[in-house]
Image (cartoon, rainbow, N blue to C red; front, side, top):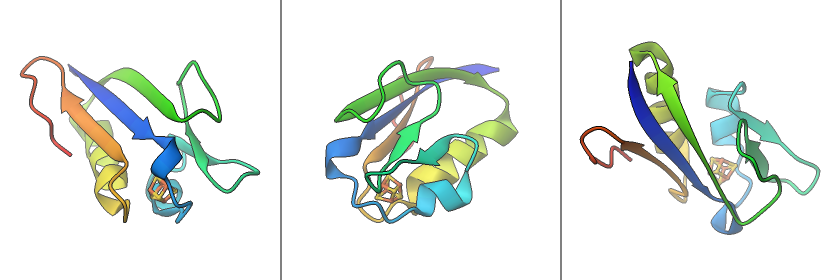
Length: 86
Ligand code: SF4
């Protein structure tokens, strides 16, 4: 397994909900119309991030959620290579 960083710029989220539809275990919609990133220490804030050590299958779900976002406010970085995947 490889470590990845998932970053969420919540301030620029438009609440389209695509991430929630694609990966509902990671993205939980809130009363203000924007989701929280599951596992983040902070909730309902402008910036959230988590470090995950995931299988290829779970990484694919994070990538699909990030790519589904119409305003590209979700980013995924491979922490071992430094490569920004989304
Ligand atoms: S897909 Fe993007 S804009 Fe839509 S709720 Fe998720 S983070 Fe926000």
